[in-house]
Image 1 (tube, rainbow, N blue to C red):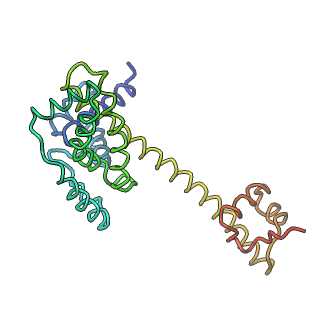
Image 2 (image 1 turned 180 degrees about the horizontal axis):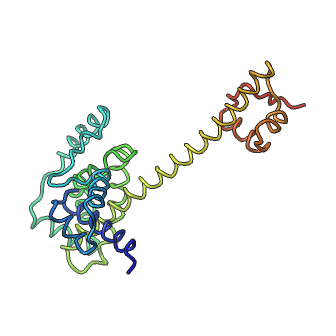
Length: 247
């Protein structure tokens, strides 16, 4: 197998293991995982930096609270307080409710959803600080949980339910983060286009001492008509150096 492929696969396996351990790994676990690749000390340092950037603690869990602002902390405290209404359950009761949910009992499905709500919060904490609000992560996780508890009939054993639901919740949160990152990338691209057109228009405005036409800006900057008009539109007509009046 290609070395780069083995490295990428090992890194993903390490990340998944960390998620199953409250986003925490020991240094020994990391070194053992990468030992077959014989990485240099510098390469291992890069691995540790990558893990830390992905909120994976080495030796101890990452303190998620450092990634939350005051508003998110207030929301989390209030939300956790609201969950106190759902009494804690013993392992025996959880298993009985799970078995009934697997059999399609609607009351059990509802109760199992309640039981797992605090676990959605714990999973959401693992993804804190990745460009999305904790409240939104919990919302996405709760939707995945609500769907997941209706799909337990496909399992053979009640012991499999927690792992299945956790995976569905994680997938939902990761998808949401990825979608948000893509939207942010698009927003940055749009902002960059608007800024470049605005800068070119302002420079020509300073030279001519008047608003510039789209044609003049095209000739001076090399931007196409569509690029200029799109930038003006996306700015909300805030590129005032461009004369957009049409007869």
